[in-house]
Image (cartoon, rainbow over all chains, first blue to last red; front, side, top):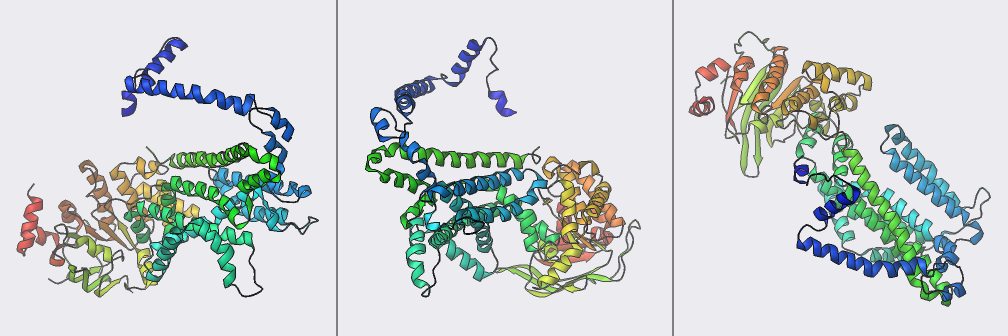
Length: 367
Length: 262
């Protein structure tokens, strides 16, 4: 109420008159804002037309090196020609419908879960959907049954690999991070110390190191003959790493819930876990939606680091495509622009969803 | 200062029975070097209404918070409803099922509706079917005259309404003992009465109540005994008439002159 009072009166009149009034109020109020507006316009005029010419007007989609050589703009033909390599990596060419389908199933479950939060009747179906969906994805990716040929996971790559690493990473890092956060606040000294040491050690080490240790050092400790799959090791490394960060995010949320809420739960006779689940966590987690999604986004982008242990995630397959023919190598800008666009799309969707979720959960409660 | 001696009441409230439901003997508590509770002895009979008052920092809130183990104590013994309150989690949970507390700042759950606040503990602690819990919740909401707010969120209610919801939430557990920790201190003055009215009604129904409050009118109307605490010890304990008309200790006199002077 107070804020609207400060706003200038709503402009009336023709569209152009309103536009002028709006500009005066918003773009040219005072010399500093006017200068900034003009500066921004100049920057756009300087940048946008050349960019547009490069990306659209002078660009080509022709999937041949010859076609690209003829144009001065972007060679989207590189992406066009190597699309399947970029998307699916070294997965056997004839079988690439399987990762595509797996990706669609994964996106389907994710969308269902995200949408289901709003509807209590769907909420119960979320966990069963994952329990059914994840094996379907596993069967599609690995095969070896139902007439599908077996595909070793060292051939997996591209977007499905990135999405699987991220989705499984989030699903397991979330509860593990939660346990660590609760452990750090525990009254039991052993559990508290263990949690603190874990969080501080993992946080103090770069992800690359964790992945290296998972892929190079860890097997040294295993007895002869026992091997743990490289992909699994990378996945576990990502989970362990992300959980440490999430734990601190959740701890922030737990500390923001007033002491009285714990006491009210206690005084009503609720057990520790009941209090946590019904009273404390719903409030704490709601408070930390923005930093939680922050961690998820950063984790999704960090999955690109698995390339250093020889897994080809989405960014890795772009590099693979660039190297597939020396003639393509000079079109790295297009390749990375495409990868950036896909990453942006995913991360931006996550950000938008988190904003929606915050708004949705805050509804009813406010005056 | 004999703890269990029956005190005359003004006849409005039923007299307590002889059964002792809370026994505090030689209870001591320290925060570091600070001695918060000093050799506290308190015996409460079933149906008894006790008002605890005293200057801030006197340990009165701490005392009633030890009775449902929101606070620990280091020596002595506290028995509630025949259960020894110690480190045993089973005992603590058993006591908390029978003892409910109303807080100064209500401590309602902001993410749940009023009705959900009320049904939570019956459903999860008493394992009551949801339908039955809802009926129970509505029953107590009507008793605190706030049934029409059942589907609102706590943040949409006034302080007085929130505190009445908090009382109803405790009543839904059908406790044997109710603890009130300065239930009206955080309220705007015009809302104090609506909460006190509910508390007086409870007292008249024979609920065992321990109430930390400075509402001396309430003490005069319903208390069987008034306990005055200062610096961690019980200084004086007497029936309301004797306590207000004929206080024995100088500290009590000083305190009464300070709070009754306006």
